[in-house]
Image 1 (cartoon, rainbow, N blue to C red):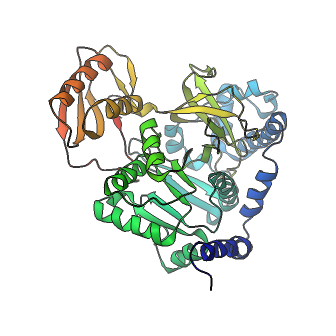
Image 2: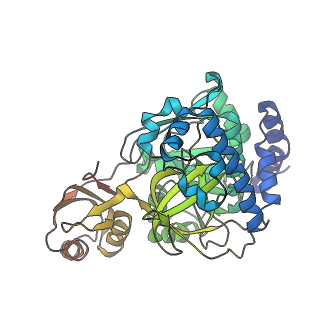
Image 3: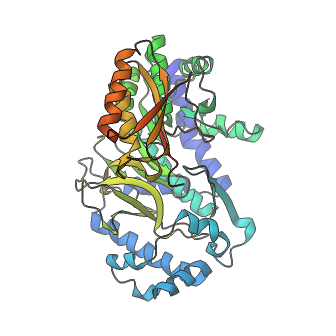
Length: 456
């Protein structure tokens, strides 16, 4: 008889070699082949990678011009025509696409001739709670599925292994079909981040010991909260092959605690609902490899390309969404480009780090913007006895600090808060403290560390 890890390994192997290919054949999905092809070509030269991107860009711009009334109108307003796209510098002649543009022009952004039954509606809540609706086709979804599988396996996890998910609104429990699919193919189980109480975390930790997943996956801060709980409970060490953090900026202190508690490395990943996976860390953890397989990623500072090490706004062109093209989409996120090349041998360009969202920035009384992401990490590490913090700004000269206190919180903590506020915001900034039992996530399951309502 075969027991334990060996039985788990055989099951994973069977799923990987038999169940997954048969299921993909049934669905007529090429995602497994796409994943394999990306692995085969991951060390092609950067010039070849850029050449492939360019060919896709030319086709996408021509398609958007020919099929989408919105782009014909916008291009016409700027005097641009597809034939003018001769070099990478010409990409900047295309107008920037904003979230408001998408909300106001959804119908005219959809490619003419696309049958309604072939369009898959997608929705993202957005950082300010204002939803964004858009459409994709299944072929585009399957390509991105292949990209995600390829990148997920950088963590050491393989298709067929169980995954422990710290996530909001798990979809694999919707009906009996999704449950069967999950048990035979997807192989995931979740701690719902909308219900992260001690009882739920205890049950989740027990399930981990039973199912023996090779990957722990989830929102950055939710992973941190679970790691903190496990440390306090002194649970036995479980050997994940990797931890995949996504959906939010990963703070250094959060990465440190997760790696300390679970004794494995955290792989940081960045993406969004609109274009899927954008960049992710490899096993060397020295920057995030940009997904050039179906995206063009620009990082702009005052309209120009940001220099390596310089923070700028992310602008994304999706090279696969023919149903509703996203050309030069300004997401509202900030990142820092890198000039380095990763020693892992993969030739994808690198992001040095993510810097948060524009909406996460707070304003001093003097009119200077301050990164809320950096602030909350700074406060979390310097204030004694602080478990969690959220900073909210509704007025120019006052901020609200919502905090969860630990046992060591006391007078020294209050003095440190006073010092930090003065140091970071200046002497004119007033503040209010609100102590709560816990900070609740957004409906998506994500946490917002800083909220500025001055520019909503």
